[in-house]
Structures are given as structure tokens and as C-alpha cells.
Image (cartoon, rainbow, N blue to C red; front, side, top):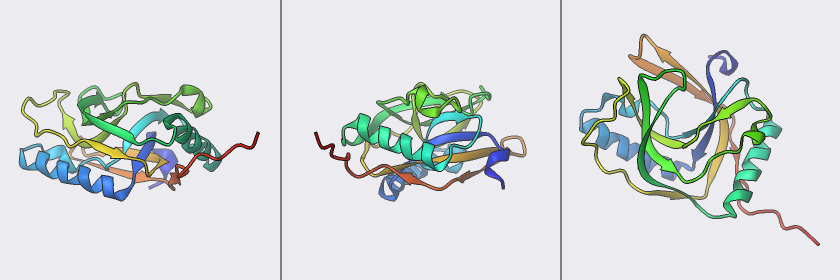
Length: 179
């Protein structure tokens, strides 16, 4: 699968320990009867892209994310559902909403940010959020990366496939500036 031939997204990829917590929540959703629980990777789409971002653009975004967070952790605790992908109003990405947004100027004209980034635990079809969903766990992490992700629906929403490009990790600490 060629990443540039499919719909593209900029995603925030948390460290694998956080993805494990999210995967366990997906398992709870699946047990509750939501078949879309394993149809989305444990990442947060930040923007839809018109082209893949290059290594330097990803590096700049990673640095800006660390800078804007002031080295603090990323927190997600509120359950939320957003249309995904943007042009498909009949499916919702359900998960935990973050308390930040990406600034459009970071994308160099290559994308359109989502207004409320959600780390995906389940893809709901039909455009409706289920009423009785298991309570999501609160997520808090500092280790994360940004990457390009391609996404494709298969056989009329029977399945999905995705590919996440090379990860560009956020710096552990902000670079010290010398006056």
C-alpha cells in the first residue's frame, strides 16, 4: 500500500504503554457489542492532509508540540465522538478527547486540523454514538510521536486498513536557549 495514494492524516502516536491501555478499553467496547472496537489504531488524528508531511515538517511539528505543552503531559479523559474521516458523515471515531488543538500554520498549507483531536478506541458506523458505553480510562502521557497515516475503508465499511509512516518522536525536553 502506497501511503500517498490514500486519504492522509497527521496523527499523534502515544508511547506503546498508553496504546496498551487504549487497546484494553477497545476490548471492553468490543465485549459491550461494538464491533468497530478494533478497527482503528491507538492514535489521535490531528489533521487531514493533502500530501504527506516530510521529515523536517514532522520534526518541526514535534518540536512545537513539546514547546506548546511546556514539557507537560498530554491528557485525555473525556469521551468524545468526531466524524471520521471528515468526508464520511456516517462514521464516528469514538475515544478520548484531548485538551489541545494543532495550529493550521504548522501544516504549511498541507492540511486541515481537526477541531477536537480524539485518540481512537472505536469506529462507530451509522453516525450515532451508542448510549451505554463503558467509561473510558483517563490517559496521561508525555512520550509521543507524530506521523503521517493513510486510511482506507474496505468493502463498504466491512473493514479498514491503515499504514502509519515513520514516527517522529517529540523531544524529551525543550532545548535550553543560551541568552
